[in-house]
Length: 260
Image (cartoon, rainbow, N blue to C red):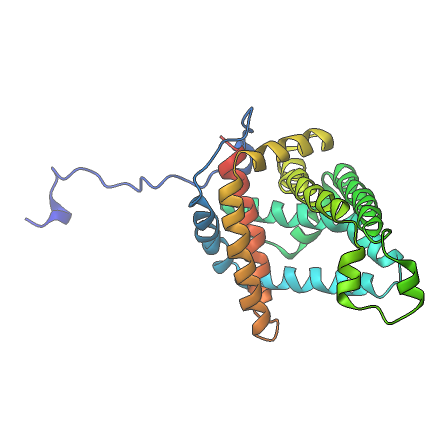
């Protein structure tokens, strides 16, 4: 008797768990600490999200690049607008990654989803970024105050004159502040866009998440840098794949650290 006609054969059923719906993203009270090797899983787990929707991801990336290019054509105001709107576009793309992870279809209009949801807090993040960048520029500019002005107005400035004239203390402070700023904003957009966390609370939680995971984040940054370099080598066309991959991995890393 064949298995197909065996009345005593146990029934077969698909026991594969369904995709996790976006609504089940329950935030942990505190971010968890993960192993350094998790950086690899952030990339490996996010790659199918990109590969299975590659055409739409490329269109989204082209759209994002195009918007940034147009804004860059406007002197001064274009850079301000790009910084202000950056978290809004990023938030929308992350909502698209959440949709893919939940078994939904990725759509081109996910690029603009941040304007439909959470636009005010995401713009707030952009405004904070702009203000902090301005203050950071002042600090870096202050590093050159100690230069010998006679050298500037006299002989040709040599590289060693530039280094000798710098205020190394301010440079060190600037580097520390830059790391501090990166930690504040690293997960802030995810927290605001995906879990509706208030802006200043998101900054605090992002800092805690980074503080508890320095090794995986450093490892991830190195891997991301290698991917960007590889993408740029291929006449920048590789970036059309690398950029959405990094967006998707940002979503995966956020889920591993902040979501139950």
